Length: 254
Image (cartoon, rainbow, N blue to C red; front, side):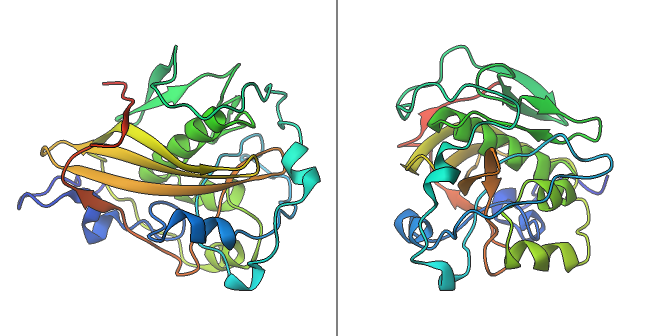
């Protein structure tokens, strides 16, 4: 591992250059409505091969504006979960999800509900995938994507958990990114900016070990039976520092 993200200057590590994780994670720094307007049509992502296959997670993005007027198809919206998880309620949670269980992935407490919300599959290579086709399923998926990308698995997120399209192709062709070191933040809350059945935009609030706070918006699309990340057209974005967690629904495992 490389040096931890801890700041010696009091700056929030979520906004430092080393926290800009190329290709796959963190922030779409645009209004949620704009994100939703430019999400492309769902296309098929090839089934994973080799050691990474059984998993798939969700994520966020700013796709190519050329696909703006292409809403997700009805078949994509109704597509069943790849591991048979029930869709469950389509009501957007406005309080802390009941019965959340947590497990450490690296040093980050991560929500888990394998039979209800996901991940329904966890691969031997660390890939966590298959989430329920519901707002709460998207909530679990986005956080698991953030955790994977923050703990040395950004390559898996790019290869298996990203919406199929030109931006994903660019990421696959780009050189791999170095480890960012031991993350020193924990999930503290969330707010769901938008949910439409095939699309979700969720803002995650984090508390950093130095006492500061950060926010990472994640946009997702339902594709091939799971929630998938849509990478920003710029290839990378950074989390933003916030003064407090006002407006976030508390959700933490520590």
